[in-house]
Length: 322
Image (tube, rainbow, N blue to C red; front, side, top):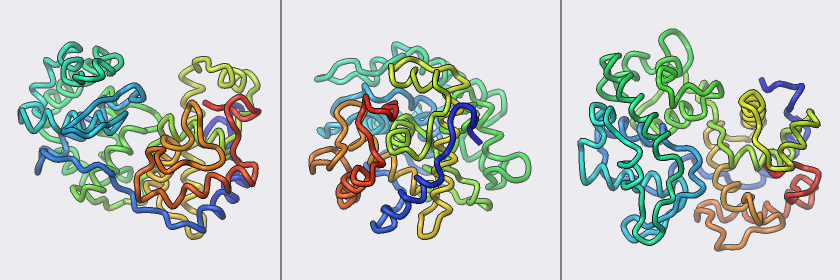
C-alpha cells in the first residue's frame, strides 16, 4: 500500500467515479495500433525490449509508414519497423553492443528530427537486458514464461521475480513488468494460472489523472507543494504516489460492474493522455480531434460528468496537476 503519511486513496471518490463509469461501456484492454513484423518467439523479445526503454515518451514524435505517431505509439511502431528490416534487432546477443548513438539514429524522424530523450540511458538498459539473458542462459522471453510455469506472482520462481533481474524491470511498483505481462496476454501469446495477480501498470498519465480527479490525495504539505510547483520528487515520494494510484485502480476494479485492472489501466491511460493532458487539459469536454482512440470516443461525455461532480480540477487549482 502507498505511504499514508504522504498520500492515500480516497475510497469515497473511487466509488463516485465507479458510479459514473458504470454508465458507460468500457472497451476491452488491447493496443490500438497493431504491431507488424515480430512473429512467434520474436514477439516476446520485441516487447521485452520495447517496454524496457518505454519511459519519458512524451517528447517522441514522427512518421512511421506515413502515419503520424506520438509517444508510446511512435516508440512501438518505429521499433517494429526496425525489426522488420533487421531480424537480428531482437537477438539478445545484439543488445550487448547497443549504443546511445545507434538508438538516436534508430528513432530519429526525417521531419521532426531527434525527439528521443536520454538515448544513452536507454542503451544502458538494453545492454543490461542482453547481459542478464546471456548470464542466465535465456535466449527469448518465453524461456522465463516456461521457467515460471505461467505464474505471475504465486509459487517460485514467478515471472515478476525473474523479470526483476533486469535493471529496467526492477521498479518496486512493477510498472514495466505488469505492462509487459499484460501485453503478452493481450496479444494472445501467454495465459497465466494466477491471472488475478495481473495488476495495472501505472504510468505518469495515470498519476496525473488520478491526482486531478481526486481518487488519491496528497496528505504531506511539502510533497503537495512540490507537485504544485512542478518540482522533482524523491524516489521514495515517487514510489509512494505510484503505489497509491495502483491501489486506487485495483480498488476500483473490485467494485461491482467494474472491469479487471488491466482494462481499467487502458481506459485511464487513453483518456488521461488524450483528454487530461499535462498542458491545456479538456476539463469540461474533450473535442473529437483530441487524439482519443475511436473506441473510447463515447466516453468524452464523461469529462463533463467529472467536472459537474467536482471530481476534476484544472492545473493551478487546489488539486496537484502532476
